[in-house]
Length: 339
Image 1 (cartoon, rainbow, N blue to C red):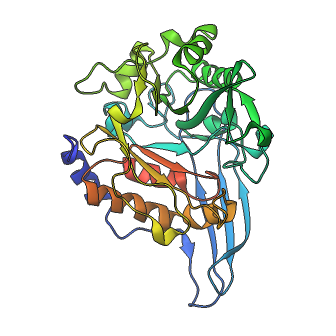
Image 2 (tube, rainbow, N blue to C red):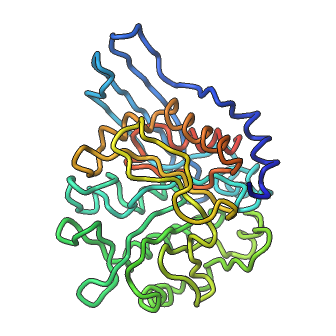
C-alpha cells in the first residue's frame, strides 16, 4: 500500500462501494433509457461542454441505440483560480488527483483511422478541449519520421509532431491545466525528444526527482505542466520517465465486463501512480464502441474504480477508456476527486 492511503480512506467515505447510477431503470426484461449530463474540466480557452447520452437496451441488456453530444470542457469555477478545472485540486499533489484518460488517444475515426481499429471518435485536440487530461499514445518511426499508429500504419497514421503540436497549443491556451502522456514507445527516445525540441516543449515538461510530488498549483506556477512517461524507454532526458518506475496498472485484455480485474499487471504495487484500464474488446479482440457504451456508464465505471481503490488501497490516478464521450468518464473522475 502506498503512502497515499489516508487520502484513499477519506475518499472511500465520499465514494462508497455501492455506486450511483444515472440511469432510470425499468423492470427486468424491459428496455431502459439513461440520460446523463456531465462536464469535463478545462481551463482558459476551452469551450463549454455538455454530454447527453441516451442508451436504449433490448431485453438482453445489450445496447442497441445510442446518441451522444459533446461540445467541450466546462467548469463553473473561476478558471483563473482553478487547477484542471477545480480550485479544490490546486492544493493536491499530482499523485492525489484522478485524470480522465483515453486509450490509444490518437486512434480516432475523426483523425482518419479505420473504424475497425479506432479506439476513439474525436481527435486529440478535441479530447483535450472536452476535458481529457491523460493521453495514451503509441509512437514509432515510420518512413523516417515519428508517427502514431495502431498496429499497422495501413489502418491509420498521424504524425507524432502534429499531435504533440496540438498538445502544445492546448497548454499555451490553458495555463491552468496539467496534462500527462503515457507512451507505448517503439521509437528511440532521441527521435521523440527531437519533436519536443522542435516545438519548444522542453521548458514545459515536468521532471520527477523522487520524493513527494508537487501540487498542481506548484506545477502550474513553475509552468512544468506536461508529464511524460514511456513503457519501454526512460531517462535521459530527465523528463522522459519510465512509466513502470512510477506507476502500476490493471490488466487490459478484457473480452467482457465480467473479466474486469484490479490485479497488478505491470509496475510495482508500491509505485506512486495507479492506472485503471477500463475497456472491453470485441470477440475478435478489436475495439468496440458498443462495449464502451455499456461499460462507460456511471454505474459500471464508478463501481469498478471504487472496487480497485478498495482492493489496492491506492488512489486511481488515470481512468482509461475507449470512446470517452460514450458514457460518464468525467462524472466518475469528478466523483473520485470529490469535486
